[in-house]
Image 1 (cartoon, one colour):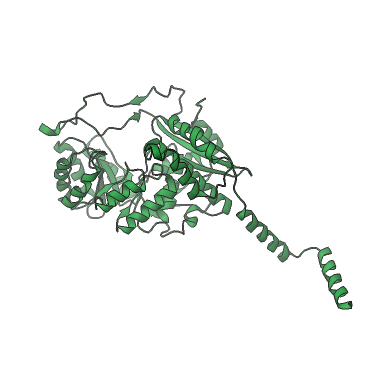
Image 2 (image 1 turned 60 degrees about the vertical axis):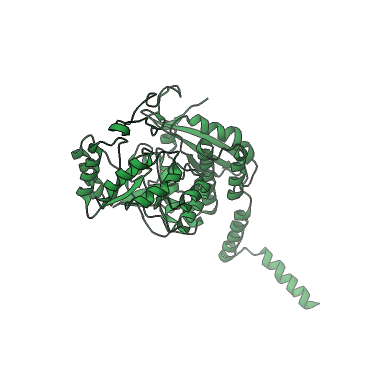
Length: 437
């Protein structure tokens, strides 16, 4: 009896005594674990239209497309209808940011690729996706992804604005998970394969001399690959520009050539064989017309120059068909188009299964676009290089954030902040946010 009383008295006195620092630390750890296991209940989902320069103009005012009957400008039968010019919002750069807020006030940010008609993406998010997400647990990233994909799957909406809007949601959920756990997204994906990710940037110039000079500037900054556009016609002038750039950086650099869906198969084969002779063309990108994906296997068989495709594809099923036919030596999916990190990770893994390398395509948008692509690039074994080497210095780049991203000597570095490490400068972000209502 006395022993039981003694034990009870000791337990009682222990409870009265102030806890030691070690005990307090252990208690905090236990509470942190409990908090990490608690649902991240979604309170709101918002979509913000971003524009630079941010002028008050009607949304339909600057929409631009070549006139009906516009030709490629080639010689003979190469002078045909031009099918490869996308709609542009001339003179402006636009995007849609997605802001997901939990019941506790935690916020995650995502981004959609939306260079034209961004209110379309905004409406998909506000009217279709947001009602299905409110009250749900934001930790269920894959489940939410499948739920949102299913919304219009039976109607065939598995590409375009629907998938771009889904990308913005998914990226925001991954950012939210990183912030909730205090981890960078690349760590949630399994960690980094490399400290810095090689990057390239686009080059340009009104003359051959100017584009060579721009190329040399990119190489001097530490980049080993540059990318240039190639005209849809057969004229020798554009090839001479590629030839001059290739000669200027051989043997220490490569030039990638992008035709943005310009050519029919026979045109692409003839053009690509000219690139073969140069020896340091990194890849021939999006050579074939957008609706001629099955022909990529024949192009890849015909050329020594690596064939790159994927910017115009949106989901793993499309990439399955491309890779299964051995139609690409390199793929360039766009994270803000292909359904975000969740689908992007599946596509990168699928490419690795076919022993194909990948390079994130990065188009118009904010620094978050670049950061999300960077985290996925670092966490995948088969990513060799990524676009956007000059994104950090662009108007929607480091100027919008509190902690800038670093690109040095041809390498991009992710910071170690939670999520994607993008903490907006509120005033700078407000200055490029468009009022849509």
